[in-house]
Length: 308
Image (cartoon, rainbow, N blue to C red; front, side, top):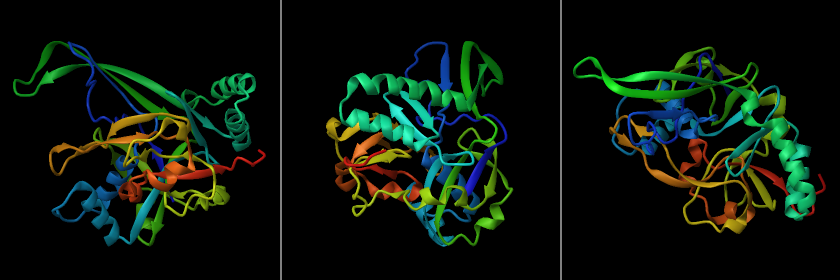
């Protein structure tokens, strides 16, 4: 497992753009709290990169991973001394520390005991809101005219960076041959298009080994449970019936910027991390071509007969 320690505040933007919805003299870029799997995979790919090959960005990363004996990635996961569970209700996101608390709320939603789950849901988000685990830093700047080497008049921009609080890390589980990972331990590298400085720590996931065996790619055989928690975005190959999503959000996202080809990567429909989906989604609606990057990571959560 590779733990990622932030040395400075980060800004990772899934859209790869600076305020694409803003027209005028001010632009605003806000970092995601959790980097996309393709950002982490791209960072690892750049470390092991040796020569330029033809093919799409996914094909290049697949070849790099194959050369290192890496079958794929699981995550990024959010860990302290234990695994935290992302839980989404619309645009709100929490990092739940206690799985039993999460299951109690989920069971109440399934059973439609509205008078119970609504106050419990709000209580859960007050207790575990993701803002509690991060510091936010807003910076103001003025755009530059790079050709003239002067500032652009009245063109202010705003950037919102995030920094995990002490003791919180992003982690990825590396599947396959890990013999080359030891060389990464303690290494200082850059993350994302903004090249923020991070440190890699190679460690064993023993602190939550009982959970690791359950966390996996979405595969057709992985459907013995009725409900699954999405730990990273699920990339959809078809439209999904809203009734198959218990809580969460469907959103079209960009997979970032393809530096080698000088263009943006594809836009894809996803069910975002922290959503809870029914097994029909896991069985047939996921594009598994992206799974080796860390997308489509799920945790089997419960069956309808489970007692939390």
